[in-house]
Amino acid sequence: MVDPAGLVVCAAVLTAAGLFGTVRAAHDGRLRRRRADAGRFLSATELGGHLGERVTLVQFSTALCSSCPAARRLLRELAAATPGAAHVEIDAEARPDLVGRLDILRTPTVLVLDRHGRIVRRASGPQRRTEVVAAIEVAAAG
Image 1 (cartoon, rainbow, N blue to C red):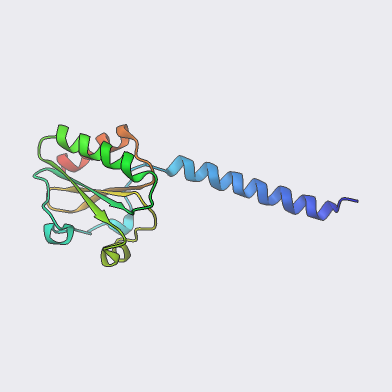
Image 2: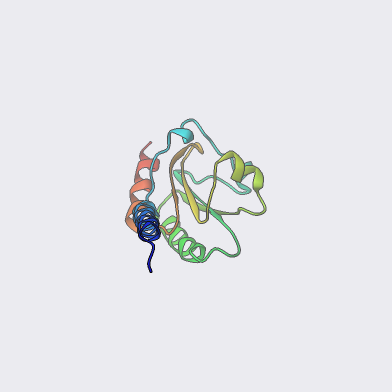
């Protein structure tokens, strides 16, 4: 005989998991402004490279990240096509100091910096070209 309470619990767990998946999929790759990033800057020294003249795309990656190669290709392509833009990739495992300070929770995480190194947008998960292009425009204008 089937336990009705067990069915209710099973249905509740499946509903919660479906809701979580839907919300996460809607937020993946969306570049947005976070209050916690207000006033945060990254220097060329911290990045291990240089800042772009207008905008810098910073990508945090790990060796086992399945979405990181696609993000790398997209960001390199957009940086190459945008005058004054630079792409910097950081191995999250090699830089736990930055990962902790910047609240990097998953890879790929992309930070869009203005010419001064101020974080203007961030996204986690697979990137969307239109979102990155819009964030580049915001950073370059500001």
